[in-house]
Amino acid sequence: MDVIDILVTKRDGGELGPEQIDWVIDAYTRGAVAEEQMAALNMAIVWRGMSRAEVARWTDAMLRSGERLDFSDLPRPTTDKHSTGGVGDKITLPLTPTVAACGAAVPQLSGRGLGHTGGTLDKLEAIPGWRAELSPEEMRERLLDVGAVVCAAGAGLAPADRKLYALRDVTGTVESVPLIASSIMSKKLAEGTGALVLDVKVGSGAFMKDTASAGELARTMVDIGNDNGVRTVALLTAMDAPLGRRVGNALEVAEALEVLAGGGPDDVVELTVTLAREMLTAAGPTGGKDPADALRDGSAMDAWRRMIAAQGGDPDAPLPEAAESRPILAPESGTLTRLDAHAVGVAAWRLGAGRARKEDPVSPGAGVTLHAKPGEQVRTGRPLFTLHTDDPERFDRAAEALAGAYEINGEYDPLPLVIDRVG
Ligand code: URA
Image (cartoon, rainbow, N blue to C red):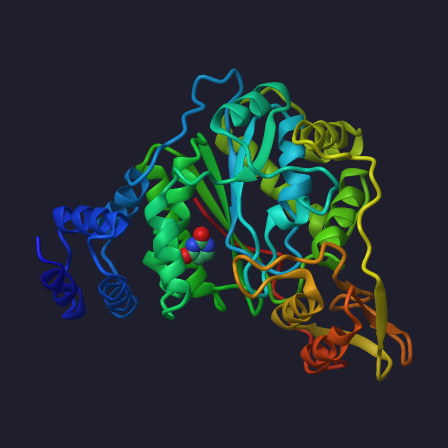
């Protein structure tokens, strides 16, 4: 097989055959195709796209590059959720124990944050003692005794994607529906879940800025999941403003705890309950309770405490707080009509909540508290945001990110929280 033939075929708008796809993914994973050749092929895919058959085969080849976990013999049905990433998106934290409390098991492999979007593992690592690295045997034990596990993907799962994603990140080839869909779905199929709900974010804080491209990504991933025997549905949900009122690792854990205690911001509660119901429906009958009841009666909180303790965390330990905080005051009174998710994510990142390179540490207490959400009233001289950081030199750059991020008394035309469903 000749790699030049493969990239010229795609460059000229042709369709790659299954043998070509299998060969190029395998050869690249083994190091037999050079990084610059794969980068050129990725760029050709960004421009030319892929047919449904090509995406399916590309995903399958990435899945076959590593091991595939299998939890089909567990006594409970398994179901999982994947979000395409956003700002303040802490939903996995209350969602996973809620679904476990309702009778299904959740084998969730998560990632760390890169750039302005946070990562679930960074959030959970704000809890003293909590450990993300588990073996497949430990995952199985947690699913049996707690019904929920959130951990890092081991090196053996979809190794082709690990290499390919790092290359796409530095070659401007992340934004492509077939490449994003195959990357996400190869990892989700490898984790061994029986059902999957995709939360495809739309808006300024998301990869997909408009509903049409988010819908195309959702359709592509739903087809890949169902074609591979995993019952898959997708919701398109708003990411024009941040979710909830806190952005940053420990800040988001604290907000998740409010939801698990039966309170918390309306949008976080609504999305948790909506996604939990979708996950349970996709899993099949569990005979369990409704997610809203599990949040109200304390059983979701009990599952959370067991889930955290089973991975070495202390659910009663105080959460880390940043050393310094500074308010940003509202310049006028009126209705907050816009709050840009991307800018808030950048501010939290500049305060130390995120990382610029994979190996950078994050500051668990850093981030942004939002004192008003779009549609709410603000008053001149009252705090609009509070910035939290361990390094006060970071305040000014974070404040710069927020300078054009909001509007008071402008036009108010928010996206609905759940925009569409693709099933
Ligand atoms: N998340 C992934 O895992 N892969 C992508 O390509 C984009 C987001």
